[in-house]
Length: 124
Image (cartoon, rainbow, N blue to C red; front, side):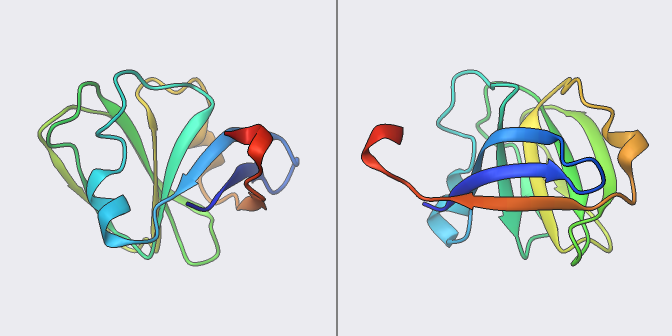
């Protein structure tokens, strides 16, 4: 599974240190379902995606929609389990813990930069 970090392009500030990239159908279907609790440093990124579901989730999530240039377009807070979220004019979606303390709404229009990390034995 591809992993990395998201940085706020303008300042270079690390937003999420542990980003899992959901590229394939089985990954996308499961997403955050296997987690018992969310972590403030973890996010799941769904490239080429404009909708997500929270069926079977144990906790609420925040959903962030990015355009094709990875600029924040939409922020939907506190999506409860058993819902479907469809976003318009987005190219990808980030899921993170509900109540994420980042001022995401203030960053609308700002670009995020994804930095891929190599998976190695020490990271396991």
